[in-house]
Length: 217
Image (cartoon, rainbow, N blue to C red):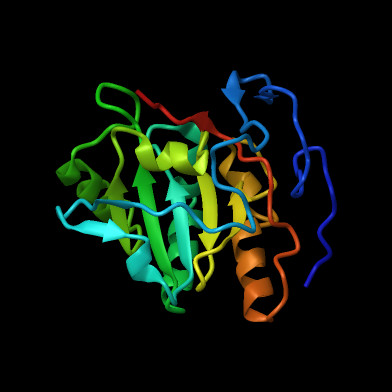
Protein backbone atom coordinates (compact mmCIF):
# COMPACT_ATOMS: atom_id res chain seq x y z
CA UNK A 1 0.00 0.00 0.00
CA UNK A 2 1.27 3.49 -0.82
CA UNK A 3 2.27 5.76 2.01
CA UNK A 4 -0.19 8.60 2.56
CA UNK A 5 1.41 12.03 2.54
CA UNK A 6 0.06 15.15 4.16
CA UNK A 7 -0.86 17.80 1.63
CA UNK A 8 -2.56 21.15 1.88
CA UNK A 9 -5.76 19.37 0.89
CA UNK A 10 -5.55 16.63 3.46
CA UNK A 11 -6.12 17.08 7.17
CA UNK A 12 -5.87 14.11 9.50
CA UNK A 13 -7.81 13.60 12.72
CA UNK A 14 -7.26 16.32 15.27
CA UNK A 15 -6.58 19.07 12.75
CA UNK A 16 -8.33 22.35 13.51
CA UNK A 17 -9.31 24.71 10.75
CA UNK A 18 -10.46 28.25 10.98
CA UNK A 19 -13.65 28.95 9.08
CA UNK A 20 -14.32 27.83 5.53
CA UNK A 21 -11.96 27.63 2.59
CA UNK A 22 -12.74 28.36 -1.05
CA UNK A 23 -11.58 25.68 -3.45
CA UNK A 24 -9.75 26.71 -6.60
CA UNK A 25 -11.33 30.17 -6.56
CA UNK A 26 -14.68 28.75 -7.65
CA UNK A 27 -16.69 29.84 -4.64
CA UNK A 28 -17.16 26.20 -3.65
CA UNK A 29 -16.82 25.78 0.07
CA UNK A 30 -14.76 23.01 1.59
CA UNK A 31 -15.85 21.45 4.86
CA UNK A 32 -14.99 23.16 8.14
CA UNK A 33 -13.20 21.50 11.03
CA UNK A 34 -15.20 19.04 13.08
CA UNK A 35 -17.32 20.95 15.56
CA UNK A 36 -19.38 20.15 18.60
CA UNK A 37 -22.57 18.23 18.03
CA UNK A 38 -21.59 16.34 14.90
CA UNK A 39 -20.25 12.87 14.27
CA UNK A 40 -16.60 12.27 15.06
CA UNK A 41 -14.30 9.57 13.77
CA UNK A 42 -13.61 6.97 16.43
CA UNK A 43 -17.04 7.39 18.02
CA UNK A 44 -20.34 5.62 17.41
CA UNK A 45 -21.91 6.79 14.16
CA UNK A 46 -25.16 8.73 14.67
CA UNK A 47 -28.22 6.52 14.39
CA UNK A 48 -30.80 7.25 11.72
CA UNK A 49 -33.95 5.77 10.28
CA UNK A 50 -34.93 7.44 7.05
CA UNK A 51 -36.90 6.71 3.89
CA UNK A 52 -35.37 5.16 0.81
CA UNK A 53 -36.73 5.92 -2.65
CA UNK A 54 -38.90 2.78 -2.50
CA UNK A 55 -40.69 4.22 0.55
CA UNK A 56 -39.18 1.78 3.00
CA UNK A 57 -37.26 3.04 6.01
CA UNK A 58 -33.57 2.22 6.27
CA UNK A 59 -32.01 2.14 9.72
CA UNK A 60 -28.30 2.28 10.41
CA UNK A 61 -28.85 -0.05 13.35
CA UNK A 62 -30.12 -2.72 10.97
CA UNK A 63 -26.75 -2.70 9.21
CA UNK A 64 -24.78 -3.69 12.32
CA UNK A 65 -22.26 -6.37 11.43
CA UNK A 66 -21.67 -4.85 7.99
CA UNK A 67 -19.42 -2.06 6.78
CA UNK A 68 -21.50 0.91 5.63
CA UNK A 69 -20.52 3.65 3.18
CA UNK A 70 -22.46 6.91 3.32
CA UNK A 71 -22.25 9.13 0.25
CA UNK A 72 -23.80 12.61 0.25
CA UNK A 73 -24.71 13.64 -3.27
CA UNK A 74 -26.28 16.35 -5.43
CA UNK A 75 -26.61 15.36 -9.08
CA UNK A 76 -26.35 18.98 -10.29
CA UNK A 77 -23.08 19.66 -8.48
CA UNK A 78 -20.14 19.73 -10.93
CA UNK A 79 -17.91 17.96 -8.41
CA UNK A 80 -20.43 15.12 -8.16
CA UNK A 81 -20.83 15.04 -11.94
CA UNK A 82 -17.06 14.64 -12.28
CA UNK A 83 -17.20 11.34 -10.42
CA UNK A 84 -20.38 10.08 -12.10
CA UNK A 85 -19.64 11.27 -15.66
CA UNK A 86 -16.25 9.57 -15.47
CA UNK A 87 -17.81 6.39 -14.07
CA UNK A 88 -15.59 6.63 -10.99
CA UNK A 89 -18.36 6.58 -8.40
CA UNK A 90 -20.31 3.77 -10.07
CA UNK A 91 -17.17 1.62 -10.38
CA UNK A 92 -16.40 2.10 -6.71
CA UNK A 93 -20.00 1.32 -5.74
CA UNK A 94 -20.04 -1.88 -7.78
CA UNK A 95 -16.65 -3.01 -6.50
CA UNK A 96 -17.47 -2.38 -2.86
CA UNK A 97 -21.04 -3.70 -2.73
CA UNK A 98 -19.83 -6.91 -4.40
CA UNK A 99 -17.75 -7.42 -1.24
CA UNK A 100 -20.84 -7.26 0.96
CA UNK A 101 -20.45 -3.61 1.95
CA UNK A 102 -23.65 -1.55 2.26
CA UNK A 103 -23.55 1.66 0.21
CA UNK A 104 -26.15 4.29 1.10
CA UNK A 105 -26.40 7.39 -1.07
CA UNK A 106 -28.03 10.31 0.73
CA UNK A 107 -29.68 13.41 -0.70
CA UNK A 108 -30.07 16.21 1.84
CA UNK A 109 -31.05 19.01 -0.55
CA UNK A 110 -34.17 20.71 0.74
CA UNK A 111 -37.24 21.22 -1.51
CA UNK A 112 -36.70 23.94 -4.09
CA UNK A 113 -32.90 23.81 -3.90
CA UNK A 114 -30.25 22.40 -6.23
CA UNK A 115 -30.12 18.63 -6.07
CA UNK A 116 -33.58 18.08 -4.60
CA UNK A 117 -35.38 15.19 -6.29
CA UNK A 118 -38.51 13.13 -5.83
CA UNK A 119 -38.16 9.39 -5.17
CA UNK A 120 -39.01 8.70 -8.82
CA UNK A 121 -36.45 11.19 -10.07
CA UNK A 122 -33.80 9.73 -7.77
CA UNK A 123 -34.47 6.25 -9.15
CA UNK A 124 -34.30 7.55 -12.71
CA UNK A 125 -30.92 9.10 -11.95
CA UNK A 126 -29.66 5.83 -10.49
CA UNK A 127 -30.75 3.96 -13.60
CA UNK A 128 -29.51 6.49 -16.16
CA UNK A 129 -26.09 6.75 -14.53
CA UNK A 130 -25.87 2.99 -13.97
CA UNK A 131 -25.16 3.67 -10.31
CA UNK A 132 -24.86 0.76 -7.88
CA UNK A 133 -25.78 1.91 -4.35
CA UNK A 134 -27.54 -0.46 -1.97
CA UNK A 135 -30.19 2.24 -1.52
CA UNK A 136 -30.77 5.95 -2.08
CA UNK A 137 -32.03 7.73 1.02
CA UNK A 138 -33.96 11.00 1.02
CA UNK A 139 -33.16 13.51 3.77
CA UNK A 140 -35.01 16.71 2.74
CA UNK A 141 -35.09 18.04 6.31
CA UNK A 142 -31.33 17.63 6.55
CA UNK A 143 -31.59 15.82 9.88
CA UNK A 144 -29.21 13.01 8.93
CA UNK A 145 -26.77 15.27 7.11
CA UNK A 146 -26.51 17.67 10.01
CA UNK A 147 -26.05 14.83 12.49
CA UNK A 148 -23.00 13.72 10.50
CA UNK A 149 -21.75 17.21 9.78
CA UNK A 150 -22.01 16.63 6.03
CA UNK A 151 -21.11 19.92 4.37
CA UNK A 152 -20.27 19.09 0.79
CA UNK A 153 -21.22 16.91 -2.15
CA UNK A 154 -19.63 14.49 -2.41
CA UNK A 155 -18.99 13.87 1.30
CA UNK A 156 -18.04 10.34 2.29
CA UNK A 157 -18.25 8.40 5.55
CA UNK A 158 -17.40 4.82 6.52
CA UNK A 159 -19.02 3.04 9.46
CA UNK A 160 -17.41 -0.22 10.57
CA UNK A 161 -19.12 -3.46 11.55
CA UNK A 162 -19.30 -2.39 15.19
CA UNK A 163 -21.04 0.86 14.30
CA UNK A 164 -18.01 3.13 14.74
CA UNK A 165 -17.29 5.95 12.34
CA UNK A 166 -13.83 5.22 10.94
CA UNK A 167 -13.55 7.62 7.99
CA UNK A 168 -15.01 11.00 7.10
CA UNK A 169 -14.12 13.39 4.31
CA UNK A 170 -13.35 13.56 0.61
CA UNK A 171 -13.57 10.75 -1.88
CA UNK A 172 -10.06 11.55 -3.13
CA UNK A 173 -7.22 14.06 -3.11
CA UNK A 174 -8.10 15.94 -6.31
CA UNK A 175 -10.55 18.78 -5.43
CA UNK A 176 -11.36 19.75 -9.00
CA UNK A 177 -14.23 19.34 -11.44
CA UNK A 178 -12.00 17.87 -14.16
CA UNK A 179 -12.85 14.27 -15.05
CA UNK A 180 -9.26 13.68 -16.13
CA UNK A 181 -8.16 14.22 -12.53
CA UNK A 182 -9.87 11.00 -11.43
CA UNK A 183 -7.03 9.12 -13.07
CA UNK A 184 -4.15 8.81 -10.63
CA UNK A 185 -6.02 10.31 -7.68
CA UNK A 186 -5.64 8.83 -4.20
CA UNK A 187 -9.06 7.36 -3.41
CA UNK A 188 -9.45 7.69 0.34
CA UNK A 189 -12.51 5.44 0.55
CA UNK A 190 -10.83 2.53 -1.20
CA UNK A 191 -7.66 3.03 0.86
CA UNK A 192 -9.62 3.01 4.11
CA UNK A 193 -11.38 -0.21 3.17
CA UNK A 194 -8.05 -1.80 2.29
CA UNK A 195 -6.74 -0.85 5.74
CA UNK A 196 -9.79 -2.39 7.37
CA UNK A 197 -9.51 -5.58 5.32
CA UNK A 198 -5.89 -5.89 6.43
CA UNK A 199 -6.90 -5.58 10.06
CA UNK A 200 -5.20 -2.27 10.67
CA UNK A 201 -6.50 1.14 11.69
CA UNK A 202 -7.47 3.49 8.88
CA UNK A 203 -4.29 5.42 8.18
CA UNK A 204 -6.04 8.56 6.94
CA UNK A 205 -9.27 8.70 8.98
CA UNK A 206 -10.24 12.33 8.31
CA UNK A 207 -9.75 14.42 5.19
CA UNK A 208 -11.24 17.69 4.11
CA UNK A 209 -14.31 17.18 1.93
CA UNK A 210 -14.56 19.26 -1.22
CA UNK A 211 -17.43 20.10 -3.54
CA UNK A 212 -20.68 22.03 -3.51
CA UNK A 213 -22.22 22.93 -0.18
CA UNK A 214 -25.12 20.72 0.93
CA UNK A 215 -28.33 22.64 0.24
CA UNK A 216 -29.94 22.46 3.66
CA UNK A 217 -33.21 24.21 4.43
